[in-house]
Length: 93
Image (tube, helix red, strand yellow):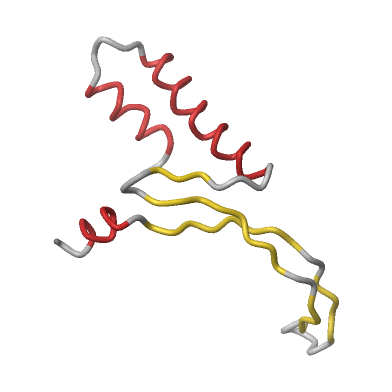
């Protein structure tokens, strides 16, 4: 599902809301999650999962094309851990 499909589904299920308002709500939720993660905060949506940021230390990597060693800089990557309710629903429990 892509963002526009999510907006459309929410708008269809809530006919009392304008589509532009639903779009603002969805965008605000994503912006808040992104903003919190960029500050290094953890975002937990109970039953769904938790978004966090993990730090990857610098290391020596290898260019797969040439086999040459390259320095890979330290970086921060997003991480998502599923919640118990989501795991249970995916596994049919």
